[in-house]
Length: 230
Image (cartoon, rainbow, N blue to C red; front, top):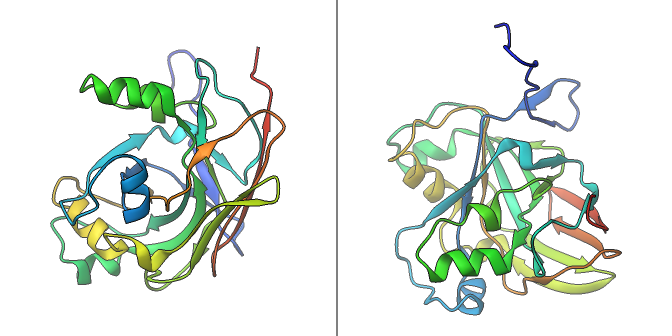
């Protein structure tokens, strides 16, 4: 294809042990998938059907590192997450069938302009301004896996202090259940990433903060918040 104005780069994430990259098609995110986080956001953590929002693949920051404080917010929050990468097509699948589509996992941050998210939520409007913006989705290289992770410690430190701590087993909806449910609405395929939710303890960050997030058996993500871009 010849681009009219400029060539478009395909967003991609490194894969551990591979020279080839994982091209990203879409980025789905699961909202309030840990009971503690649901409570701190003012919701009742029952097993109602999961809900989703999305980020543009251009929001990804492969490998983490320095990211600027987001514009137009006074309340930028961290949310540490286990990310699942799909490696096969899935449509209207059972959880058992959905589990077979897992290509691997990564550690991700869902950076959130909380003030903008809440302003939209309170008016019944979409969350795009609060969730999908430049540098809002740092992510580690993908670790290939033959099956979905069902348990493992997940945590986030800010300047050496634990802010978030939990276990993947605490998710209200497991990875197979999430993929199966999402596949009722989309023809999922290789290249789709799913951020699976965050444990309790989300909070603000500021320029100069050093973030270290980890998921047991997957890896560690390091991010430094720099001053806003001009």
